[in-house]
Amino acid sequence: MNLQQLKYILAIEEHQSFSKAAEAKFISQPALSMMVKNLEGELDIKIFDRSKKPIIPTEMGKPILEQARAVLREVSKLHEINRAQKETLQGVLSVGIIPTLAPYLLPLFLKPFLKKYPFIHLKIYENTTEVIIEKLQKGQLDTGLLVTPLHHRDIKETPLFNERFFVYAHDILEKHFLLPEDIDAEELWLLEEGHCLRSQILNLCELRKKSNAQFEFEAGSIDTLIKMVDHQSGVTIVPELATLTMSKKQKKHLRPFAPPVPVREVSIATHRDFVKKSLIDALKDGVLENLPKLGAEGEVERVEIGKM
Image 1 (tube, helix red, strand yellow):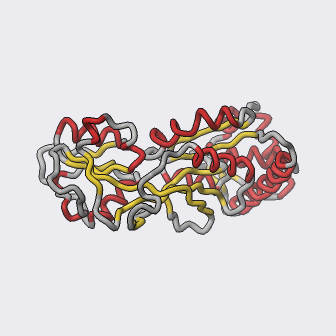
Image 2 (cartoon, rainbow, N blue to C red):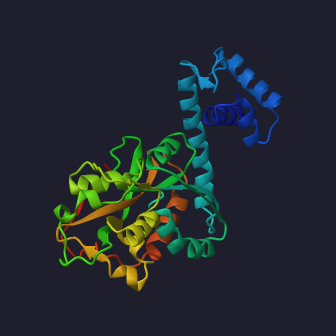
Image 3 (tube, rainbow, N blue to C red):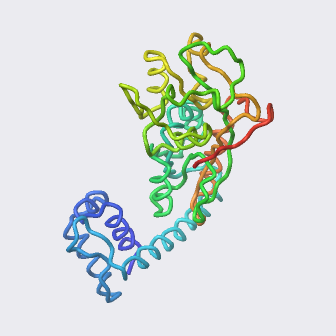
């Protein structure tokens, strides 16, 4: 048994295919299959059910895969200890980030971070919260930039900042400060199912959107929501970072909520047995060092609505 075999079986689990796993690991499929067959022979079990398409682990194979992840995490800790003793931070850091954060947060810190840490190689993947959590559990990501709390026993959360929510409306609203009940559900544009921001807004407004309108649309991004308000009227709710790049004309259509101000908490998330602590600490510092002052920090009474 060797570490390479453990990496191969985890690759097969991830890709659900011997051929795709071999391609990802830059090895021929026959060579990979032989390595896995030798491991199964040594353990005297079948790790994968090859009769299923896509390939899935057998019941006896599942704990083997989980232990393989644990072994490789411990090996990674040895490398992390070695890196921590060197003056220069270096290594690969894979980061998951949700779509409602990526276009607004990444441009703020990415360039200065890479300049400050030239020997850290960032791999950034944009995906939903559920997918990022799954990849953190499987060791396919080192960390995630997510909206919390997650209420997940395997995930450790380190809060970074809070950002307020704002109402963005086509028609200039008479009230300067709004309450959630001021929002007409029939006029509200929302993200499509699968985005945690959608659940947060529905929870905030205490509604389940129903409509008999001639035209219904659920967007895939905050920018699309803003454009729908601009061109089709209506109203949407946007997080504070999304307002930073708005034009002066668009900012005139923003209205804050009355206290207690609804906010969302953004955190760095890691697996409970995470490694690469020094690299993740560098990422945390990089985000905070380049984050503009947000109004939610100690300025007004606020209420966290988190991830629903």
